[in-house]
Length: 122
Image 1 (cartoon, helix red, strand yellow):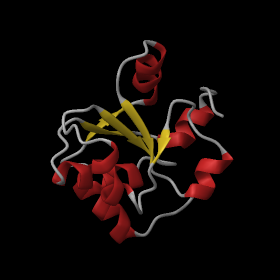
Image 2 (spheres, helix red, strand yellow):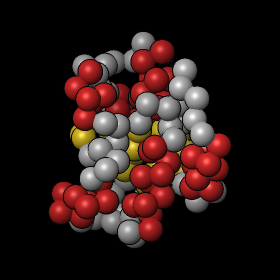
Image 3 (cartoon, one colour):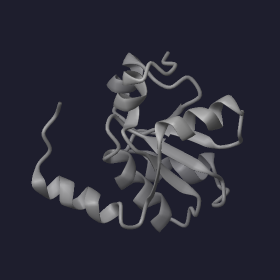
Image 4 (cartoon, one colour):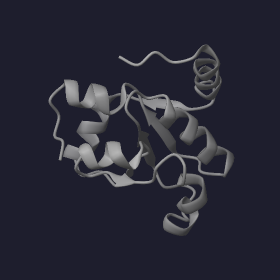
């Protein structure tokens, strides 16, 4: 398991005071019910290529703020972001909220927890 620097963890902790989290089971239930939301993978492209949640689209953390409005102009659209452990997705969700998106969540536990629970991966 990766050890994160204290300053990074403080940044994430601050973002989580503003960002709502959603658990992996709840996300899987939304997928199974075919609910209308965007599932966005914000990991590095190399991580995305190694495996992803089947319904996910890719907007790496380095580009999501730049490209999201052109791809999803609806500021009310439900978006669930995930990364490997739930930290980068919290930071990206915080940024999207600052851009005016009002229905953004970070998936707690991230892809790591998703995989550990043997949920579908492609």
